Length: 110
Length: 117
Image (cartoon, rainbow over all chains, first blue to last red; front, side, top):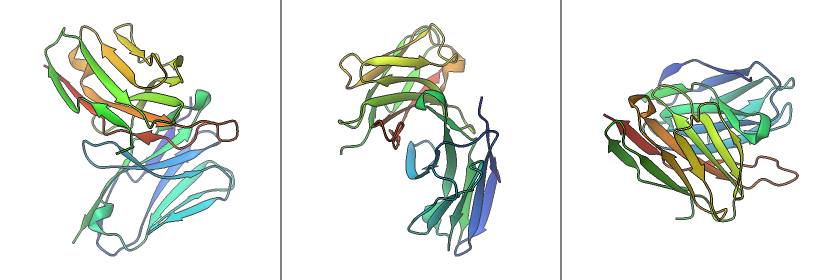
């Protein structure tokens, strides 16, 4: 079965700083999703990547999928308190279901 | 609001009782998924439907769990004889799968949090 490892597990950054979260797969990624989750709430879709080398941006968040399609990164520029939460990567597996990593908990301090 | 909605948002029950959760997906979405999430973990797949057909069930879905999507629209997840280990957030997601975009973007609901005492 496919396993996703996220790093770091948790991150505390000062407002205005940049940060990167990584997601590494044990197998080739045929689709990689990034979600954000506030504590006790549902998942908010951020981006989906499918092609090797693909890069997508939305506001201050950029996600990339490497050429070998086994690693993805999520980069936040000039972090804000509104970016705080848990970031989850999910990989498309068999039968179109997603397998998720354990998440990266982000805190943004003032 | 045209997103995925789940009901109830919170449920506290005593061990041994039955509980049922409902999910209303985005109206044009043909796929509906159920996931379970425990504290500090990512969501774990339980089952999914393509229209009204249940196409896959995880081994996590014991015989006490049953899910339906009778008309290909809303879905219910029932847990019989609840156990303390069933305490978790139950998440529903939907997507529009097509030939060219097999999975599509999965949109999640706010979840139903179950606490079994």
